[in-house]
Amino acid sequence: MEGIDEVTTSKRSSLLNNLIKVVLPLGLGIAIVYYLISKIDPQQLWVILKDANWAILLVSLLFGLLGNTIRGYRWELFIKPLGYSPKVSNLNYAIYGGYAVNFALPRAGEIWRCGVVAKEDNIPFTKLFGTMILDRIFDTITVFVISLIAFLFNMQFFMSQLQANQATFETILAILSSPLLYIAVGAAIITTYIVFRYFKENFIVRKIKGFLQNMANDMKAIWKMKTKGRLLLYTIGIWGSYFCYFYITFYAFDFTENLGITAGLIAFALSSISMGVPSNGGLGPWQIAVIASLSLYGVDKLHATAFATGVFAIQSVWVILCGLVGIAILSLKKHK
Image 1 (spheres, helix red, strand yellow):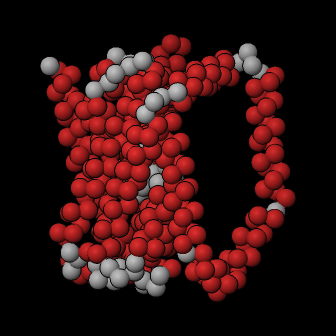
Image 2: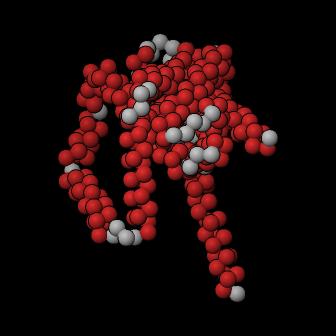
Image 3: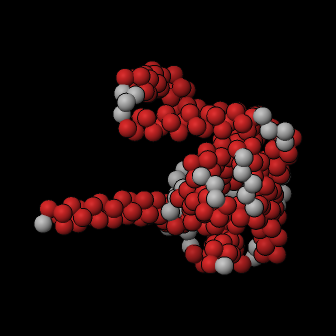
C-alpha cells in the first residue's frame, strides 16, 4: 500500500508541476492580453487590422526565418571546437521546432532542441546544453548593445520624457538610491559564496560545480576557435534579420510608417528585452513592451494595441508553422 501511495503522490506532484509550468505562464499571458484589449472595441480593432498592408506583413516573415536559419550556422560554430560535427540542417530544424515548443511550455524549447540534436548527431546532451547557454549569453550581450545604441540615439528624447513625467523620474532615482537594493545584491553574493564554500559535498552543489567546470573547459576550446570573424558576422546577421522582421511591419500600418528607424530601434529593443520574461512565445510581455514604446512616439492606445495584436498574431502563427515543419522533418528522419 505504501508503494502505491508513493506512486500516487509522485504522479500528483508531477501533474501539479506540469500545471504550474504550463497553465501559470499561459494564464498570465492571456490575462495581460485581455487587460490590454478589454477596454477596446473589438470592431475598431478589426477595422485597423483589416486596413493593414498584409503583403508587407507576409514579406517581413521571411526575415524571421532567415534569422533563425543563421542561428543554426552560429550554433554549429559553438559545437565544432568541442570535437563534434553536427548536420546544420538538423540544427536548423531543431531551432525551428524549439521556438514552437516554447509556445506550449516556456523555455522548454531550448532543452528540447538540445535533446533532439543529441540523439540525431550522437552528441552528449550536456555539451549541447553548454553551447545553448553560450548562444543565449551572446544574445543577451547583443540585446544590451542594441538597447544602449537605442538609448544613445534617443537620449534627448528620453530625458524630455523623464522631465515630463517627474513621478517616474523620482521613482527610478528612489530605486537606484535605495540601500535595500544593494543589501539584497550583497546578501545574494554572500549566500552563494557560503553555499559553494561550506556545502561543497552536497549532491546538487557538486552537480552544479561539475557542470560549470565542464562548461568552463568547453568555453576555453570555443575561445580558441579560428572562426571568430564568422561568429561576429553570424551574430550581426541574426539580429539584423530580427530587426528587419520587426521594423518592416511598421510600413504595414499608416500610423507607424512615418515614425522612423529610431522609433523602430526603441520598440525593437524593448520587445527583445521583454522576451526574457518566461511566457508562451512572448505572449503578454511582448505586447506591453511594444504598446509602451509606440505610446512614447504619440501612437494612441487603440492603434498601438492593434499593431501589437496583429504583428504578434501573424508572427506567432509563422513561428509555429515553421516549428511544426522542423519537428515533422526530424521525426521522419528518425523513422528512416
